[in-house]
Length: 161
Image (cartoon, rainbow, N blue to C red; front, side, top):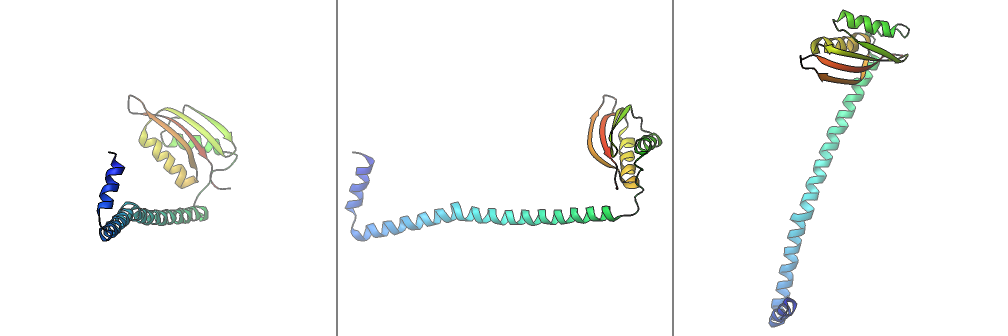
């Protein structure tokens, strides 16, 4: 005897009233399973997505405000276009950072390399360039040497117009 035949014989052995009650019970179980297995997780996911969107929108607003503040700040002494390379090299020397080589990419960007930069000197120099001159680091790769110094490649862009 197959399972289907066994089920049908059990079903036909029930009275009409029992069959209706079993169908109602099956519908109720299916509704509960659908609610807890599908609807509830979807509702939680939607709530989580809304909260994530609200946080992202707030972060975007904060970034836009910070960009507007930076763009509007008049306290930056931007480096001159003509002497950008010289000014970057002079500020590195003043910060105690030895640059092994550099290359002007265009009038607004320079790439620098240092084989043995002390981390504190490097990051103090970058902070000084950003805060005092509006120079932005657009790319930075740093690898720690065996002696604790950093091997650095960085691309710097002149801020302002």
